[in-house]
Amino acid sequence: MQNNELAEITQAIIEINPHPLNYWEITAIIESLGYTDYIVQAEFGFPNVLLLGQYIYQQLIDTEFPKNTNQPSFGWKTFSKEVYYFFEQFSHSFIYAIPWIAMFILEHSSFNRTVSVLPPDLAAPLSLALMMSLIVSGGFIQIIARRGQVYLNLGEIELAKKTCGQFIIMGLSATIIVGFIGLLLGFYRSLFPDQYLIIAAIYYLFLSLLWMLCAIISLQKPVWYIPLIFIISGIAFVVLTYLGINVLIGQIAALVCSLVLIIGLIAIRFEYSRNKDKDTAKMQMPRFPVLVYSLAPYFCYGLAYFSFLFADRITAGSAISFSSGLNFALNLEYKTGMDLALLNFLILIAITEYLHYKFMHYWYRKAKEVSITNIVELSNKLYKYYLLIILIVFFIYLFLGSSIVFFIFHKYILTSKTLEIAIIGLVGYFIFTVGLLNSMVLFSLARPTLVLKAIIPGLLINLFLGYFLSHIFANYYASLGFVLGAIFFASYSLRKVQAILSHPDYAYYAS
Image (tube, one colour):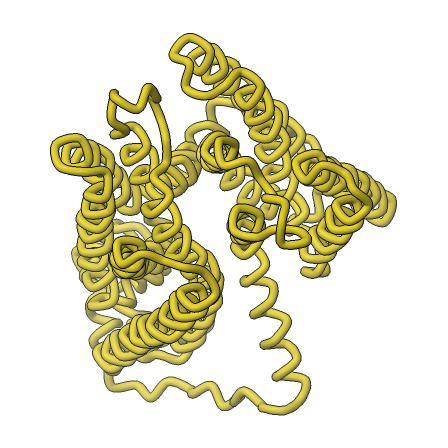
């Protein structure tokens, strides 16, 4: 009788999960079936549920679990899906590369080969406005994208609309407050001419709102919405410029055009989705403290991420000599070299997101096929796959980075110092990309705290060491602070990923 009952409970466990990874999982299933220590002792003669789980686990070790015979098919349909997934992942990050490409072209080009596109004195405040717009809105970008995606996946369009709207209001309020404080500080310290400060403040406000609205657009399909909006705005800018409109006015007009298109598209898409799913049951808004607790790690990550990218520029800009009469200025050689490296990074991080997407799908697919006896084999496969991704990123960095530097070097006259800074920047951004790849894996496995423990100390190293080196020696040394901060970020997060990959069964189960 006891053997029959053990067979029945074993069969019930297999029906719930045909591939239990360890006896802890079996024990949890037994408890979920309603068995307590008292029942297990009375019916099976085991002292407690844990020992029964260990016993059944031992019996199942030699059991041949059914294999997944569904092999992925390859063909045009599969290829088209992969291309779509690639552009979906690519578009999420590449939108942040567009303004840097535009700024670089505007600063180094001329119309009719006679008129400078941007006044040299305006380049620094506009660059600072661009950096601050991403830093201030970075945390809101993260929580809008993550929470909005959750509600859209649940079919709760109204809830997604209301939540994203609240975050937009909060983000815009924070943007205005930070911008007002920065404007007062700029007037008080005479950082830049007053008219340039006002222009930079307008630029900063428009860009901050644009990034947060782009986070909402990224939740909606198809993926070509954002590229199409920027293409239309770029065409409007070119047309206005060639009609004789001031280049700066044309650039702001293009930003306004982007904002109008995005706001209109968001209103149309949300209204269409609401009418389509109007019969869907409505969910209540979560309590604000719960929302803050669940999203705080992602907000901090977004803030730290963009702060890390631009900390070296801010410290280098603050290291200007007092004899110049300026309080802040970006050295042209330093800015050009780091911009070249940053453009390479912004393109490569989009590709890295796609590689991470493929890695996690490979892991989840293999986890469904794994048996108790081949967990070590799965761990080895994941190690090799992850190492392959890092090597792919490295060689793409090497090829793309050298191509960009070579093209710019022959297109424009670059000094040896600019080239040196560009190479240091490429090294630093590659190391930083490895850290971000590790962060993506940790986020996918619900380990946001580990990400913060890696990126926040790295950011502090970047800031304080870069500030110290740039003020003691020269502003070029701020790049070394960036590299050393990236090394800490990448090495710490890599150790955590290695520990997870050594026990993929537990990581998969815990996530």
